Image (cartoon, rainbow, N blue to C red; front, side, top):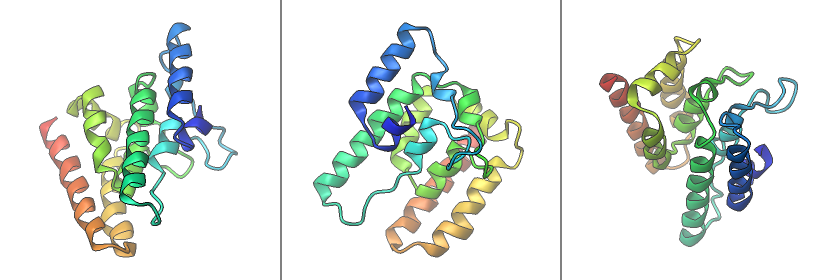
Length: 170
């Protein structure tokens, strides 16, 4: 499943999720890679969220890439629980760190359809009280500083605003 997610194979992800549902494996999305692998202790969703588009994509290719990313993320969320969302990689990051660091603002509505703001706040605080602050610091200090495009700074600010808004709602 991690391989299908990393390569945005929508049909393969749908088949895996359908088989998991038929077998009653509702938490298959929570399965992580081994700690000694690279990347270590990642869910399939983390593999998707870590992706960034190539700078060589045309407008149509970017739209297709974004569509496939949304579809794979939607499928994976069907077999994920809050525990899977709270999973921490060997680096200490969570799914929310990847959303923030890659500025995948277009995926936030998919997550908010599945999880409420209070659940998301709970995930951010689950076994890691610093998770939300780390995600926001990662945005403001590292990613924005190294950004090649000014438009990404606007996206990062929007993600920070969205995270702050969701936490205040909860």
